[in-house]
Length: 52
Image (cartoon, rainbow, N blue to C red; front, side):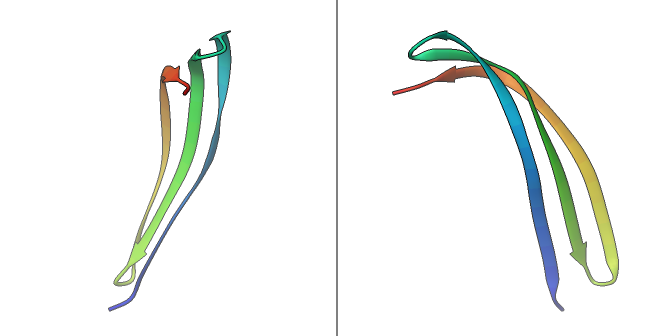
């Protein structure tokens, strides 16, 4: 049995300081195919980003 999975996406950050930002939005498209079936999903996430 063979399978295939792929994720494509991107996001936008709003910088609060040089080391901290707010991830306003991240959108991803997830595609998964195995055994003749497939699943396609859109994901959204947001959060806080700490930079080194």
